[in-house]
Length: 350
Image (cartoon, rainbow, N blue to C red):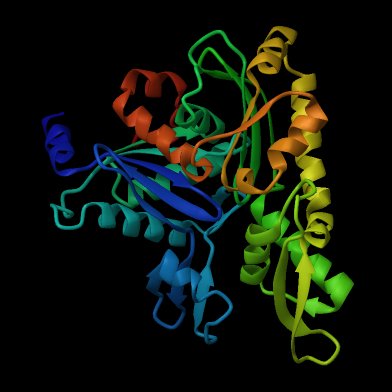
């Protein structure tokens, strides 16, 4: 116990949003200090990590054969345990730079998807312990996002949150510090990028890179008609000639490409409302739906959801950081953290 307290002195407790696309780290008393892509570049000859985060993302699609840029998380869960552990260790060490990083054994709060299995939960815990955590708390992402949005989750009120990340979209109705009804789907930011790649291939015989597709989505992607026509350059390889080619696409074409994914997200929001107790639906009708995550930034998505559900929809302040801000709030509120965190699976945490 004394040793535990001593380690706590040298450590800065951290909240982590371990996302498919980005990893964000919140440090107690300092705020969000890391917001980098969940990408790791590895030299396969030596097994050495060359770059993590922004530096590694720049290498995607541009590496020689012996270097691979890996995304260790897929659909919000760990797909490569070893690389995730190294990435977490890199971020935890970065937090303690200039301090006693040798003794750093922080308490860590991590956001996890709703439909995660026990095995996947254990993988997250083990990766965090191996990366140097003293104690690991797992919190469901929609719960962390709702706390980050400052929704009154502890009251007997229906709060509906739709967290659209990189790998998953999590839809949840929360009341009295618990998730009442929910749906988790593997349709989110990365699937939308694939939609654009598929559209370019079928309509224009053009092979796009993932990075280009994402840039187009951010620049002109939308869920409803825009007031003025938006255009972007689409650069890729012509599938007929094999040579580079560039075309100009507009927001209507990209909207067409994204329409299927947007429809699935909206259908799942409606399906979640259908299984929600009527008293909570009445609250949601009055208070509205909050959308967070990177997907909330898609132009007109709030209007499209509102039109389909006949319920007001609000975009969270700084939607990209809601989950990590929620984990940060929980670091200061241990009572609430103990109430809402998932039961531990590891022996170390018992």
